[in-house]
Length: 89
Ligand SMILES: [Zn+2]
Image 1 (tube, rainbow, N blue to C red):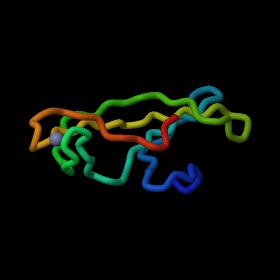
Image 2 (image 1 turned 180 degrees about the vertical axis):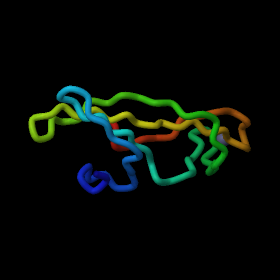
Image 3 (image 1 turned 90 degrees about the vertical axis):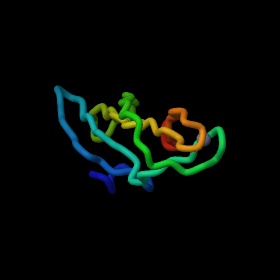
Protein backbone atom coordinates (compact mmCIF):
# COMPACT_ATOMS: atom_id res chain seq x y z
CA UNK A 1 0.00 0.00 0.00
CA UNK A 2 2.83 2.38 0.81
CA UNK A 3 4.49 1.82 -2.56
CA UNK A 4 1.18 2.25 -4.29
CA UNK A 5 0.94 5.85 -3.12
CA UNK A 6 4.28 6.71 -4.68
CA UNK A 7 5.01 9.38 -2.11
CA UNK A 8 8.59 9.40 -0.90
CA UNK A 9 9.00 9.51 2.86
CA UNK A 10 5.36 8.67 3.49
CA UNK A 11 4.09 5.46 5.05
CA UNK A 12 0.61 4.03 5.22
CA UNK A 13 -0.16 3.13 8.82
CA UNK A 14 -3.62 1.77 8.30
CA UNK A 15 -6.22 1.35 5.60
CA UNK A 16 -9.93 0.76 5.67
CA UNK A 17 -12.67 0.51 3.14
CA UNK A 18 -16.07 2.04 3.73
CA UNK A 19 -18.69 1.70 1.00
CA UNK A 20 -16.83 2.66 -2.16
CA UNK A 21 -14.18 4.70 -0.39
CA UNK A 22 -10.70 3.71 0.68
CA UNK A 23 -9.32 5.58 3.66
CA UNK A 24 -5.56 5.48 4.03
CA UNK A 25 -3.99 6.65 7.24
CA UNK A 26 -0.62 8.13 6.34
CA UNK A 27 2.26 9.91 8.00
CA UNK A 28 5.79 11.03 7.33
CA UNK A 29 8.53 8.57 8.25
CA UNK A 30 10.74 11.40 9.49
CA UNK A 31 10.38 11.82 13.26
CA UNK A 32 11.73 15.34 13.25
CA UNK A 33 10.54 18.61 11.78
CA UNK A 34 12.17 21.97 11.25
CA UNK A 35 10.85 24.94 13.18
CA UNK A 36 9.66 27.65 10.76
CA UNK A 37 10.67 30.38 13.21
CA UNK A 38 14.26 29.55 14.03
CA UNK A 39 15.10 26.64 11.73
CA UNK A 40 15.99 24.26 14.54
CA UNK A 41 15.11 20.61 14.14
CA UNK A 42 12.75 19.36 16.79
CA UNK A 43 11.75 15.84 17.73
CA UNK A 44 9.49 16.79 20.61
CA UNK A 45 6.04 15.73 19.53
CA UNK A 46 3.37 18.10 20.76
CA UNK A 47 0.27 16.42 19.38
CA UNK A 48 -1.12 14.45 16.46
CA UNK A 49 -3.59 16.22 14.20
CA UNK A 50 -5.41 14.43 11.45
CA UNK A 51 -6.47 16.07 8.21
CA UNK A 52 -8.58 14.46 5.54
CA UNK A 53 -7.31 14.93 2.01
CA UNK A 54 -9.17 13.71 -1.04
CA UNK A 55 -6.93 11.84 -3.38
CA UNK A 56 -7.53 10.80 -6.97
CA UNK A 57 -9.97 7.94 -7.53
CA UNK A 58 -8.16 4.64 -7.87
CA UNK A 59 -9.71 1.64 -9.63
CA UNK A 60 -13.08 3.34 -9.56
CA UNK A 61 -12.91 3.93 -5.82
CA UNK A 62 -12.58 7.23 -4.04
CA UNK A 63 -9.38 7.47 -2.04
CA UNK A 64 -9.17 9.64 1.04
CA UNK A 65 -5.88 10.23 2.80
CA UNK A 66 -6.09 10.64 6.53
CA UNK A 67 -2.91 12.58 7.06
CA UNK A 68 -1.25 12.87 10.40
CA UNK A 69 0.08 16.40 10.38
CA UNK A 70 1.98 16.34 13.62
CA UNK A 71 2.65 19.30 15.81
CA UNK A 72 6.06 19.61 17.31
CA UNK A 73 7.31 21.84 20.07
CA UNK A 74 10.45 23.78 19.35
CA UNK A 75 12.95 23.57 22.21
CA UNK A 76 14.43 26.85 21.17
CA UNK A 77 11.26 28.97 20.80
CA UNK A 78 9.20 26.92 23.27
CA UNK A 79 6.31 27.15 20.83
CA UNK A 80 4.41 24.45 18.98
CA UNK A 81 4.44 24.32 15.18
CA UNK A 82 2.97 22.04 12.53
CA UNK A 83 5.24 20.02 10.32
CA UNK A 84 5.41 20.87 6.64
CA UNK A 85 3.75 18.36 4.36
CA UNK A 86 4.91 18.83 0.80
CA UNK A 87 2.71 16.12 -0.63
CA UNK A 88 -0.59 17.71 0.47
CA UNK A 89 -2.08 20.02 -2.05
ZN1 LIG B 1 12.02 27.46 16.93
